[in-house]
Length: 224
Image 1 (tube, rainbow, N blue to C red):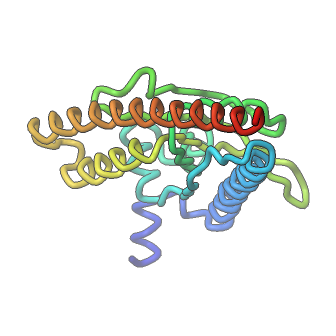
Image 2: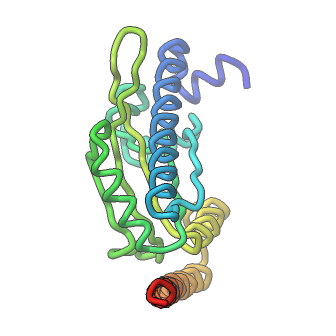
Image 3: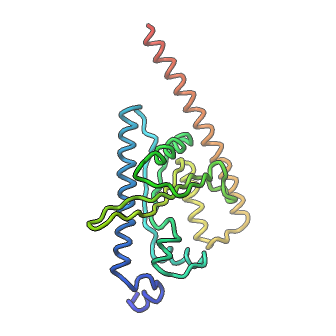
């Protein structure tokens, strides 16, 4: 794509230096979040011999997807509106084994003094109509440059492995059909979402039973 065509499609890119600076801030904010998560993981492993985080993914939205979202929401395509209105330019996804881990991590993130939580949405307690389940947090993260500290927004999504599998498939279907999947596919997705929720509940119950049995075994060995 030529420069003229590119800036016509994405007017935000006309000021290249400003755009690159903003992307630097978003990338740095993601690094800050991932560093904090690494520290929390190590601390939890040291203190409890258990890590609630299975793995972490991160991404920066492409200019194409940023523009699509701004147009869909009726915003003028400017960098100012992107920073002010679009909360998920920078995104971090935390994947856990169990739903209890999700809420444990939510509390841990809330307690991070460096992070300012500005919005939370619990799609586990209140799933979307599609069946989507996850916990979303929008946080402002301090990014330290040579001249200032810039609080930069990052969306954090926390979900189980099963939720992540379902959401990945739903995302592919959404883009395959441009948001207009046939009714029978949408119904099947909702059915799968219910099965995933039941699986998460069953796996959590099973894990709780294993932990109780392990505690009883440890107590028995100690008494002997």
